Length: 267
Image (cartoon, rainbow, N blue to C red; front, side):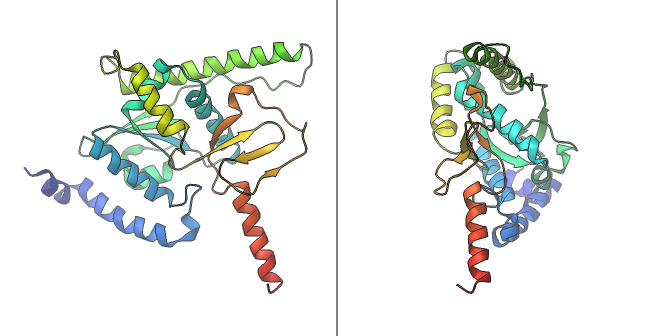
């Protein structure tokens, strides 16, 4: 059977056709805008199309609804992308990668299920697409305000936890993306290089790269920097560059407030 005809007559094809109108509405509705410029649903659908064209699965870094968890997850993803070894990054080279909420994932694939796993892997080659949830428990950083060790010792302790978190993420990704490891054999360095070019040096679709040092957050390529007083916080060194998963950057919030203020003043 012709695959295009099958898609048009299947339930999944109907869902994709319905998705088209949703995307059109999302592009025209500013309330649906995400931090990547286009609507989250459109970003997800575009990633799905890329995955189909490239013959790769689509890996979704799930954006949680809770604002505190956005920070936690963005930090975990940033640790892996910025500090993972070639072997740990290589599985990502076999995927298209986007950031999206589970509501957006379910808008595309109702079979994605409830809850907010850390990641979902979507097999775009199957019709309907198969969704695999990836939800490992990551080691936590201690909420320590103690000063029983010098700074170097504290950094060393935090780096060890970062390395554990990266290892857990990488292990579960490898098990999901390349369970027999043959697709990675001899290709780790090349795949990791492609990942760094596509996802580390550039924005991950659906997110921004940002930096935090305890003196506030700076979103890369955001012209307006917004910070807080230095010394008010502490960020583990391998978490300092992270995926910013919030709907607006600090600069966007500042500009919106400024425009609203100017409008109220009749400017």
